[in-house]
Length: 194
Image (tube, rainbow, N blue to C red):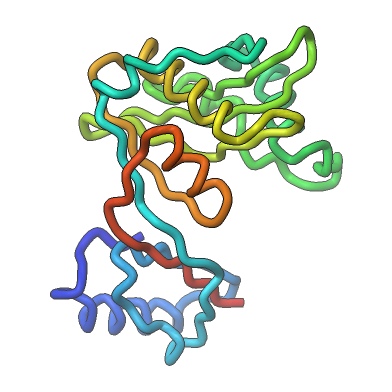
């Protein structure tokens, strides 16, 4: 992930090119400012997205439930249930888990599931750091995306009061996030090298 914009693009491209020589496996680069051209190093654009932000004063004012109740994953079994809902049941026993139970003990990381009755229908991850809260891995089934975003914003405001939310999204999820109150703050690009 790059942390500096266009003024360091040439240096970053040279460093990434040098790293390519030392890696045999596929890997990706989050071009946080959408200012690199990594095609010369064998990368292809996986997708482009938009950084988004929401002031805490707007998140605290949201009220929405749409019959959803929210709960954090607090055990290995609940995290596995979260991941199964996130993958829409596409995960198999042969595939390695992406989110390992040790993440549950990391301060500031919260895996949230939205339920109707007993059925998990939506969720996301909150990750506090650097005086902001990242909101990522938002998903939904049978619930409108904007409702899910509003629910996650409300949960973030309750768990991490007075902190702004940040993340990145694209396409329909970006539209839903913007409708829920987020503002676009800059472009990014994900590059992948097979």
